[in-house]
Length: 231
Image 1: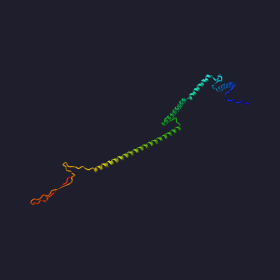
Image 2 (image 1 turned 30 degrees about the vertical axis):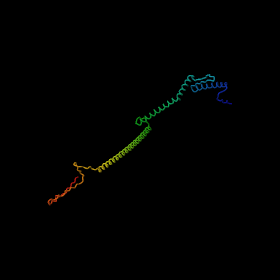
Image 3 (image 1 turned 90 degrees about the vertical axis):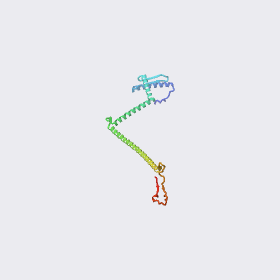
Image 4 (image 1 turned 45 degrees about the horizontal axis):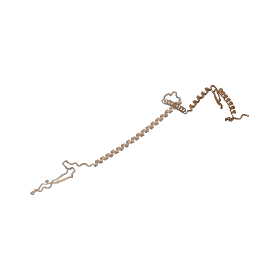
C-alpha cells in the first residue's frame, strides 16, 4: 500500500516540522549536487532554518555563485528599466533607419546606372520596370502641367479680349459724344469792328424819285433801287 500524499502547508507540530525539514534539506542539497555534476551547471543553494541556522551548498564557491547571481540580477533589472527600454527602442529605430537609408542609396545608384554588375537578372528586370513606371509618371505629370498652363493662358487671353472690348466700347461712346457735341455746337456771331453784325437781316433801301422842276422830265435811269445785303 502506497504512502499517502502530504498536504503542502505549514506543519503545526514543531517536532514533525523539524524532522521534515532535516529530511527535505538533505534531499535538496543532494539534488543540487547531482544537478551540478550531471549537467555541468554552477549551482548554489542557501537554506535558513526556522531557528536561523544556515545550510548551504555551492558547486564551485558560494562567493562566485552569489557574485554571478548579483551581476545577472542587476543586468535583468536594467533591461526592464523603463528608461533603458526606451533607449533600446530608439536604438532599434535608428538602426532600422540607417538600414533603410542604405537601401535607398543603393536603389538611387542603380537607377543612375551605377554598380549594376552585382545585380542579378531579376534585379535588372525589376529595375527596368521601375524606370518605365517612373518615366510614365513623369510624362503624365508633364502633360498635366502643360494642360494647366494652357488653361491659365486661355483664361488670360479671354480676360485681355474682354478688356479690349470694353475699351473699344468706351472709345466708341466717347467718339459719339464728341460728334453729337460738334453737331449741336452753335457758331458765335461774328461782328465787324465798326459794330455791324454780319448776320443782320437784309436791308432794302429805296431812293425816292426827285420831283421835276419847271416841267422837266427826268430820264428813267435816274430812278433806281438800292439793295444792300451784308453777310
